[in-house]
Amino acid sequence: MNKENILYISVLTLLLSISGCSGYLDREPLTSLSPGSFWNTEKDLRMALNYCYNQMNRAWNMDNQSADCFAAVGNNVSSGTLTPSNTDDNWTKAYTVIRITNDFLNNYALAQVSDNIKNRYAGEARFFRGYFYFNLIKRFGDVPYVTETLDLNSPELYGSRESKDKVLEKIIEDLEFAESHIPVKSGMSADVGRITKGTVQAFMARVCLYYGTYYKFHSQGNSSLYLQKAKEAAKRVIDSKEYGLYENYRDLFLLPGEDSKEHILSYRYSEEANTYNDRPRSVIIDFKQEPTKNLADAFLCKDGLPIGKSSYKIEYLPIGTEFTNRDPRMALTLWKPGDSFMGDPFLPNLANQTRTGYMFKKYGDEASYTNLQSRIDEILIRYAEVLLIYAEAAYELEDKISDGDLDISVNALRNRFTDHPDKLPALTNAFVNQYGLNMREEIRRERRVELASESFRYDDLIRWKTAETELPQEILGAKFDNDAYSHVVPGKDINLNAEGFIVVQSGSSRGFDTSKHYLFPLPLRELSLNPDLKQNPGW
Image (cartoon, helix red, strand yellow):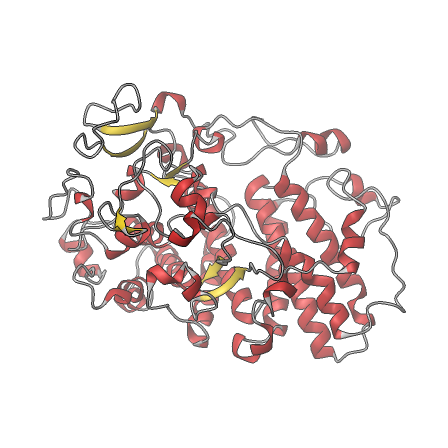
């Protein structure tokens, strides 16, 4: 599907959404469309769902909610200072799309097309419904669950919250239907950008890993059921051979990597639709997301061992030295001082580029320094995530993993850098045992560095139940190099700790309340409109 078509908002969906929201679902009846004038052709079915694609984008800087990234100021989720708000865009957007999908599913059978075509687009609708219900339950827990288009007389308008466990079961049902009826990528060459069978399988794996591990570490639900589903769904993507790893990790996140074999689903930008991605400029100049020392230190040394266990001693000065003898992804994810940047040796500007002294190279397009309208697509699902899901699900099912499963997942990622002088050795059970490592921690580390700045870190901390220890800590940046920044005055322009690292946020200003912070508060407006909605504990 062309980029402009993905972002095109059809007449139907405008009519469906223009009536606005009052409470968690619209209080006003839908603008009516005659079944005789719409719901007739395949084009109608496609148009009816295009708005859902437009709503799939999410804030690209969500990793600011973790301790791995920082912006101009502290993030209130990461810092533990969030307060309930009147509205929540995640809630509003989700229920807007859910309403559209419900209306579609109430009407699509009227189309004068084959059952295969009907079911394909019904699969798309059910994918979107599942996608947005997942966003709701992982954020809020129990939520109202509705599968019909409501009117003023519908009792569901003032219904109570359904348990997240029941909603999760319905999400899986929707995704199973979608997987059964949506074609594979190779059968949709004329529809680049639309949901494929692989998209559904990969998202199924994501959902099931989230709740398989959430249930395991929060002592809730049937963790094994969902871990098994996650492993099997990821394996179906792997076995399909429809996707693979893109060889050039740097270009994967720039224009050369668009629609590559690693892209499973992307939010698409185009000149025709007059849309652009602000990330490529923001990460190199606008203080919107910067790596921290917490993330930089997570990259392994080239012997496959973490800092402190490696035979390589990591030095931080002069600036850029810490990149020596490290995982190749470090210098492809973070900009290495001294590397070429717009034709000159790169030195992070502490006044107008970064608070931490680090900058993201991932998505950092030099051309965007002066070009404010980058068309680089935002990757929403990629094949590397599927491999990581497979490894984690396989391990968590039995608290162990075979070397064979590591080879088709973690080690496949490392083999992307076969010809690199700092290529990491294979992760094996023997290696872990030899050096006293923890396999779970190493699988999690692989996920952390491979998917850095891709909006997974906070959710990972929540599902692993480690947010309570990971978030309430001092946020540090790079070690300050007096020789490189002779014009910067410590104590005036920046703050340093006793070891000379930049302090961007003190630990005393950060906290995590386990009684409430594993869920977000419901929007206050929704509580006032519907007395049957009860606020989450502690809020």
